[in-house]
Image (cartoon, rainbow, N blue to C red):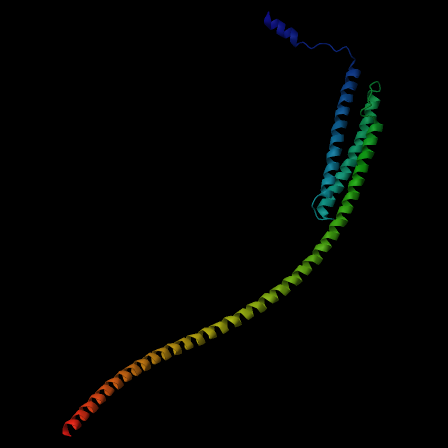
Length: 227
């Protein structure tokens, strides 16, 4: 019994619409879906073109221009395809209201997209001109910096040369000071030796004076005794 119920449920219900109506409805739905998908593709391609134009890429680069040209041709073909499908949609299902995807609205959207593209192109040209000016200014600034760098390197070489001369003079001065120090040490030792000799001489003189005084005293005593 359960198997019989399952079989009964599996039997499709009969659509009261005619075959032509079903086919037209399916075609209309397919056209709407394809039109929306094509519109999204157009928007994606226009965004991609804007990204290529406004991105940090070299201007007039061949591969980028080729890609832009391909995308523009694809957008053009897609627009023609949309117009064709809108016509078919209107022809196949004239009873349906297609305000959201009407030809007029689509044309307005296309015109808006074209205007957006033109604006983006103008912005790109302005930005490109600005970049060229900045590039030229950067070149001039770089030349000036290179010139200043050359002057600075020359000044550094001169300073290094002067430092070498000063270092050599310092070495000579150190040698002279070393000679003077050695001479002073010799003079100091010589002075010590002379002072030592003078001290010894003074002691010897004092000793001799004492001996002489003793001799004179002795002789005077002797003379007194003789008298």
